[in-house]
Length: 553
Image 1: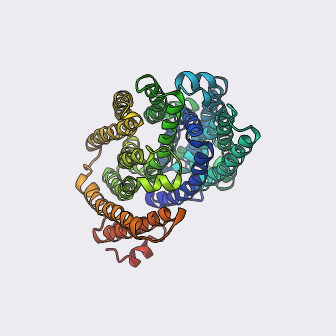
Image 2 (image 1 turned 180 degrees about the vertical axis):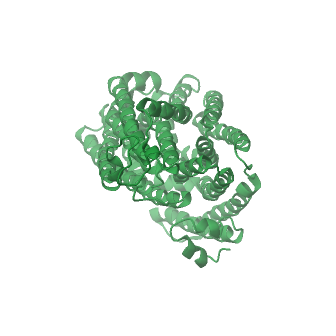
Image 3 (image 1 turned 90 degrees about the vertical axis):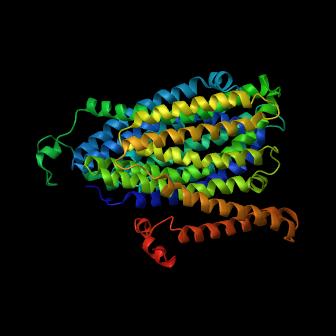
């Protein structure tokens, strides 16, 4: 077996969450200064290119790594460790070929993608700059899926932190150097500056791949030994366990599981790129804004999206870690255990996501003012709606992961198609109204994710041994978040009026004080209402000590 085994799903999620916290801090260092360097107009190019890249990224990496994780977890549960290794090798070749195809599309057709698909021609250099990254990330995802299937989340965490760290450093440096190389107001300054920032993604991906290759060779080298069916080796594994599936069967299994997951996840990525095209088109053709005005409005929307994605980033580790946990339990016939993991993970996700969404909504004005000074005035109103929507995004992500782990990945595809159509329809009509303009986009996001969350819950009730109880999952986190949100909103308003601090520090300090008060209130309510149990805490590193400190029962 591998050296790093025995991480339960919450332990693994906790490790990944530590990485998320570091990555988000680094992400703020990257995207917030970048947004201020490029301005609303330049940031629209960056956002548009990233959205089209994310479609290709999701097609290549969202489904197949989940499939790989499931197949490895199932093989591990049955003691077939040679099967794990062969599955990885086949997956690595498959992922690399897919990455080459998508990299070629991004490199050879950037102008068509930017001008025709996104209706933002200035984003073409940024689209081309994404090509190397997609190939590298595809290869990295095979290594991550293999480790995750073995229940080992540590290498993924370290790898992602390294990737973001080098992306931040190289992206900001290259963007600044490129912008300085052009005269002021040069028409290519912002397009090339955006492309320079995106090159940082490729540099980070190179470092990421090197780390994962090194990690697997060092920690899983025993599994990489030549395998021969029916031969008992020094590991003491019986001959039956040594038998491995043919490569074509592994490919079929990867695509059978991965394609519905990838297609479903790709719909979310397509929503972002359709958002870009639809918003740019309707703002100009229907609402009557100029090309530059549309870019500014879409640029500030992109800045709000950076914050909107924050809660989901903290839920993603949980979605990654529960897939092998639920799949392994189902392979062993432990359906009640799989249902308990599902319900507990939904409850924990609500405890994490609800206060973050409410906090973004009630403090949207100071958050946008502090992080993006000088941006368009629409920013706070956009973030307020997107903060509420972020909670439903988190529910959908976790519900989808549970359905995928339960072998119901095709149902997630149906849910996401429906949600995507809802978003397109709402955006089409609302963004075209000049008084509403870009504000229609977050409204469409909110409505679509509410629809998806309701549909996924209905599917979960049919798929699981025990129906997830909505009262136990939602009531306490939403009640505590409402109280916390009221306290944050009231305390910020009061401090802004009475705190005698002049100048630029006034708003940040008032906001920070309001956030600290809100966190304190929520933690007290979390313990008092027993939203997280001592049993939950025992599953994470150092949880027992923290539970005793908080006097949890």
